[in-house]
Picture (cartoon, rainbow, N blue to C red):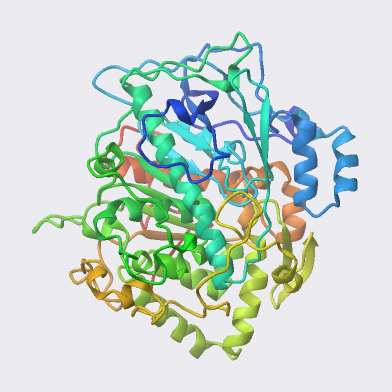
Length: 583
């Protein structure tokens, strides 16, 4: 950072550290124009919204800067204040006050041209899903850095009520409706898991719509862009024949709930032929038991997701993967375990990397589920990990579950119920709701964006773990003929590591927010509350690992500092970079 930026009171994002300048464009496309046969999960969702980050020419300039806080800023200020726990009266007052965040800009050029690339080379594509409390700008530090290495990054804004607010435009560019944030407890009860599944249903559909749009743009198709309606701004640079959309070449990425979303989409698509049937069961007409996502056979997305599909998972939040509805999916490994190993040849480079913050690393419940989700046999791995934790801990299972429910309140990207901690555990709670009261204060979850409620057919008690066998209340147990085909027999057991396993890394002295823009925008606050250090270096370590993984699997990404980066090797030489065993 320059001396001026260090002295400025305005929060600033770091400049991207790759070799290219970065451009960006905002898109909001009507769903009616997207050639997808998938049904809309909620009729309020009339558009999809996303931001593109991409390499641009060295001399690219723009008369307009891109504000980090979306427009209308007053409404977003109020939404963030409400999200952090302020009453409606207080949040309305806060929205009227001048905010330094209003002057924070993205470190990229608005609506700049795409840097030309010589044929037949094409740009790698990353689709990045945000976490709770995020939006399409909330990970701009990571997205701009990736773009500076020659990557096109698409960051959607999810309309599943996980953003503080999300504004849907009409054809004239004006606000049509607002999707508010919906608060849910973090305790893994059946009711909460149904609510998270409802959000995942929307998120997976949005990612499919986004992929369809990007595929269509690459084919030369055009769309209406409500984000620039009524302005003289053009709809971003042409993307015809510039994206690398060969099967298994799109990288699926996300943070926290976004990482969970990426896993659920990739596995739903890859295992789409093994979707259980709920016909002739008590769940047949239950709206909570609709599939999260049903892939269209022979579609571009089905062809795209293969065992070679790269994934980047930052602080994976695995709790929403544990619902009864998706137990069959939880028990199956990530597609990377079905890559082919060739005799007399070295193991292929890893295609899935996961990076965990210190805040997640120190909590056994969160870490165990993360490790299990990355393992060859998730259900067996979780059982083994929980047994090991129980053996090593003097705390009872009940205390551990209550503690985890409290800890998972740190998942919201801006700290909906943020806890600062010391070595002995929770010490200070900052935010709107305490974990003890959160389970009672939230509205009843619903699988739609409306306020109607739906009774769960499952037990309302807390789910302690996911077993390897279907429960008596599971539709797959009641209808044995619908059991998915077993494809995991050839995968390693929990005691035998696989050369195909994802790589898990820990960055010490980091918070959950360190992988988002909030870590670099508010470094002193994050350091004081969560003992997080060196936020800019943390972003760089994350991005370097992403770039190294993508280069390792053959994607055409620029090198980091000449000879390439050794960050994914044992000779990385970084003090704040630790490889973690899955089991």
